[in-house]
Image (cartoon, rainbow, N blue to C red; front, top):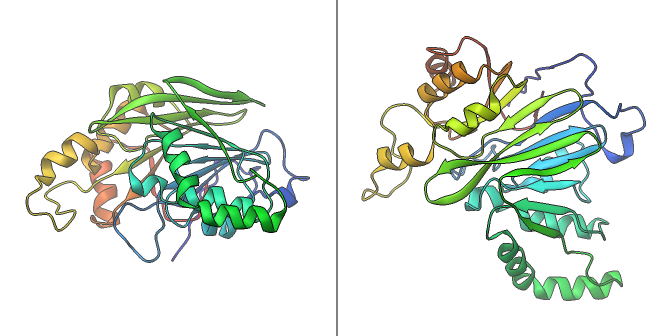
Length: 296
């Protein structure tokens, strides 16, 4: 896999880990596309997950499958992030939550980190603990400590959900079928970033993303697409109510005018050259189709 790094500023470090924070300025901001995939099981593409690293702090947005291995590959801490923000509770965005919660505990975490998400987040985590009860019981005995595996779940309304140390995270509603779903705007001392989550074109998202340094947005192929072996599903109707096509994304970006558009959550069903060409029918700004483990 060819990895292309796009630097938003020459001062930004390539990566940050807890063992390497002494040379990192507190205001530096790096985006790492840990996983850029969809439910489609491609062997070299992990589930959706984006890290925003501010100084030595790691803020994670979604946790698809393979999350801990991607954190390790990116030289980020495997013993817990500073906070996890979930866009919605579709399985491909949360399959790695168990990995993140339990593996970070195995490798030294004994304090909870906050998990912010829509309604259902607390129940998901409670049921996760129940599903792994035997594993947890034995590891608590082996580690000689109780309760260290737990995280702090917060079911959030729209608005500012995190504001500390110069980092502000604002959740805003997006339109993804019937699910409660969020996009997130992240404002740091040096960057403004919007992560779309899964959404059809959204006026709220355009408003939140207008003029940002970076817009990270999902994409679906423009034109007829058969997403799965379900002939009874009207896929065109499904996409129209749940997702944004490459042509629609270009029109959206032309209105929001981000300095950089990063295309992620990509099922690889449209050739990259065609995807970019469709976006550029309306958007003349900089576009990158992300791969796993790119740094911006």
